[in-house]
Amino acid sequence: MAPPLLHLRDIKLTFGGTPLLTGAELAVSEGERLCLVGRNGSGKSTLLKIAAGMVEADSGERFFQPGRTLRYLPQEPDLSAYAMTLDYVNEGLTAGDDPYRGQYLLDVLGLSGTEDPKALSGGEARRAALARTLAPEPDILLLDEPTNHLDLPAIEWLETELKSLKSAIVLISHDRRFLENLSRATVWIDRGESRRLDKGFGHFEAWRDEVFEQEEIDQQKLAQKIKREEHWMTYGVTARRKRNMRRVRELADLRKQKKEHRGPQGTATLKATEAEASGKLVIEAKTIAKSFGERAIVKDFSTRIQRGDRIGLVGANGAGKTTLLKMLTGELEPDSGSVRLGTNLEMVTLDQKRERLDPNDTLSSVLTGGRGDTVVIGDETKHVIGYMKDFLFSPEQARTPVGVLSGGERARVMLARALANSSNLMVLDEPTNDLDLETLDLLQELLADYQGTALIVSHDRDFLDRVATSVIVSEGDGDWQDYAGGYSDMLAQRGEGVTARKAEKAASPKKAKSTPSEAASSPKQKKSKLSFTQQHLLKTLPDQIEALEAKLEKLQAEMNDPNLYAKNPDKFAKLSAQITDVTEQKGALEEQWLELEMLNEEMNG
Image (tube, rainbow, N blue to C red; front, side):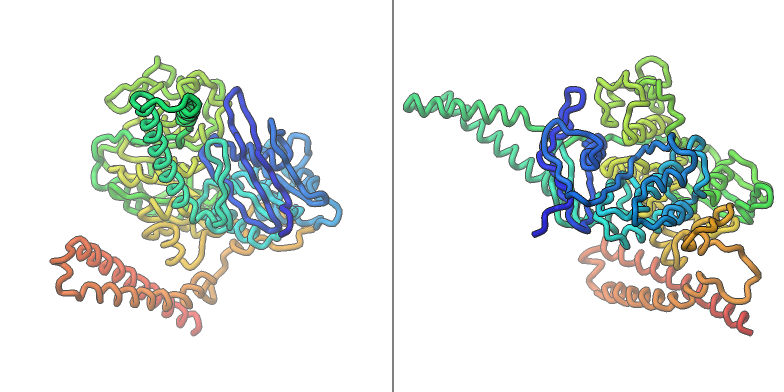
């Protein structure tokens, strides 16, 4: 068996007197696809920096095969030493690398290469860093949250790009779908140690739960053994002194083992402070439109949002999601059309632009609003330390400036501050950024139980599938369309994912390839034939209808059991609802296919 390209052995590291890594290992072989998972603050990013040679461990070994190449994507890149973004990207190339690949990657990621690094936003700087990391196609890629600040077209492009590379990849990400699609093995950092599963992320959570269950069983056995030994010490018959002293020492070791055991980190307690119920109608928009100059952001869009709906808004960066959101919530007047807000609305907004937090404010001050040491949660007051513990902060962090918190910790601060306010309408702007998977699960459960309404801007496909009841999608050129269900449901109905908005800049004369943005967003002209999307739907809809018919037959066969209702009324009700739902889906698809077929016949004369 060939030796690994990179191998970390028994890595130990302590920060501020607290052990962070206490014996972690990481082995990366040729072409391997690893995901690195663990709670916020578990040491994932630190271990990746040790692997990159950027941080030196207190002890342990790092082996990297001579003559191999490695590139690391940081969460917060520094471009200050460069005049333009292209200079920064090209500086990472070596002899033999494609000299035009850096420009191609910048174009795909929405940058021209001529930007002044001093004027870049955090998201733009990370996209430039991603281009610099991918351009050389190294033997090993170490990627720390590569999807942060990317829109859906860029995320899906990045998946395809990474799959096509021969490089070994070690990946940290909060995006479940991204991890499931790319990983082939999983390394879990937990309480300073690493565990490896030679399966992709899709198998991780069941495995993790099994580990915790076995650990709980082992601790129960240890407690029983200690109890037996203590009983022997008190009531046992005296044996030879030498044997007795051995059992005394063993008992002391058992007690020490139990005392030093570090159980799994607790989970955050997420609970929204709900206001009185709003009216049944929450938002009604009729043919609203908005333009900036000659560019249409929203054209003739209408929708009705009812109490309890979970509406996802998706689209490329620059498509106008924020503008549409502001119009729907009454913050921005449309140029034409009308928006009617329902009665008794109390809105809370989760702003994921965490740079708006004053970095010098302490955690306690942010949560209390600078007023004493209590947090007002609806009609109740709670001591700030207790509220901090609900979101996994220790009492010692009360006076910590938020500027030194990790990205995941700042995400929990924003959640804690938003959920303390009473509401029946939540507006969540990229709520999943930097949240660990366990906290993300709790946020999904919170939204499922929330009695109010939620508007969610997100690029996280898995999150939208789990939460959204419908998705509003940018179709380009100011057109927006409402689709029932989550992201995958939209994909099935639409026939393709979200396409990128064309960058408003001149094309590079040296560019070797056309970018997905250019291919997907050429200017609309007078139609003489069906669009690509329409042609695709016309071709694929019959198969989708046939699949629904087969599903309907299977459900109907189960319903034909005359004793079903008597034996299992819950299953009977569930099957009835499924049959109704599938029948409606089939009817909608048949109607859509018929309209496209008629349009196709009309265009073909």
